[in-house]
Image (tube, rainbow, N blue to C red; front, side, top):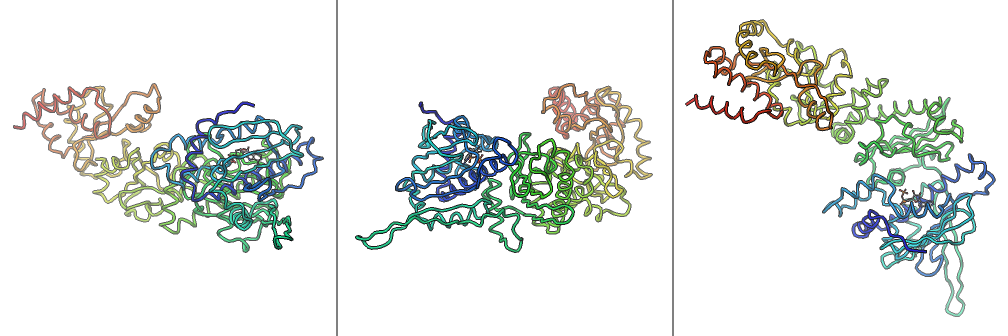
Length: 619
Ligand code: ADP
């Protein structure tokens, strides 16, 4: 049969692995055992649900043979679901996982050398080429008659041909290379299995031969030993489990080579019996913001694997959580449709969300640790504030913001505690760039009053914040909305506003339809003018964001121009009678406010001429 070429990304990955993960080459065994375990999970499920496979005589196991088919070979064998001809080519000739694919595309330069990064992307099956010159995979799919053999040297490509295999399952034969020689020792292999795969729920048997006696009376004996504990880790008593056990388990289910940030193990008994073991990764999964993200929670029923591809097991905003849910009360043949309406599942889900949120709350008691969590997961939690109304009150206490009053992060509760007595609402300014927001002229008046303003620079803040309602009866008010300042006004301000009417009229006459309104503003401490959006209109930043997203038909900007009657420029304008000068200065007040908001001017040439005319007059 003709040899087939690997898809480009496979060659790239292989190359990368060989050059960057060498010092961790032993992980190949973890990857192969984990594949076997998945294959056994899948078949076990089918023998319980698929009529044609119910009669199958199936005692799941994984066998590892040292020198099983000649010197310097290592064989990993399972009696799981197996692969047919097409599946061998699809699974082992391409990289199916979209996150790995994306990752490969992004990876350039020095990042390629970072083995930690690479470890996060499920190197999977291909890692065996770190220790083998050639690899053979002989497989027979459960329920089919033909067996197939996939062979490759991990360089140019692979071939698939007909083969023999007695029953269903997969045998991986590694012809060890120089670097892989150390893996033909039973001690070495045993210790790696213990280290990485002790928690695998199926028995792993190690086979090796031992030669004893002198030259004349040499005796070779076949030895066999079960190496792992073979019980589902999450079902073992918590008191028996060490941090390392949990961490290794996390690594096999998450494809992350780092230890997790946090874990939550619940063994619930009573009316509803279930176990959940959740992990929070140290670094947010790469695909967290992709629509086709891979869910991280596996569902088991009485230790039988059901699915790892259900996005409904937890709410979408908790998609960064990794782990397992194992229920004693769900039927084994539970289908996806049934799952979604199932009462038991709904209860487990609700209890899980509650537990996760309460654990996050506990985390928040340690500022330093919580900052690490927030750096990764603030944004999905903010999504939760509008998508999960039932837990909004918990979530609102978990999210954090930047602020004009403190370094680092603040909660709304802490903001509330800092509020002076006369302050009645929570003020915020949302946009896309923290540094720019901090320079906004709108902040001046609040600073003068001693009012703190939250700086919200997450993309979704502008959409989410207006929707979450009050926090402990305190309204959240965007300071770039007209009217936001009304509550800051003193009698003195009101008088000033009244006195400013003529100059406001003068400016509006010049600007015409370019602005909706010109109003006096008490909030501008240093600047002569600024722009605000009318309530209900998209703000300047939001408009640009919509434009960048390719949105058409965004309503024309209808800004309100606020001017500072105390500023010398505005005072000068009030007294000026030279029509040309009035026109220039009024336009400049508007244009500089546009520039401060980061909005491009429609006619920069006219702006420059105006600026030059006015400046010339200063000499
Ligand atoms: P991953 O396990 O992350 O999907 P791998 O590269 O390790 O990535 O494996 C690719 C695919 O090959 C698996 O998803 C599975 O479909 C198939 N596969 C690998 N090993 C086995 C096995 N022992 N039995 C059945 N299928 C397997």
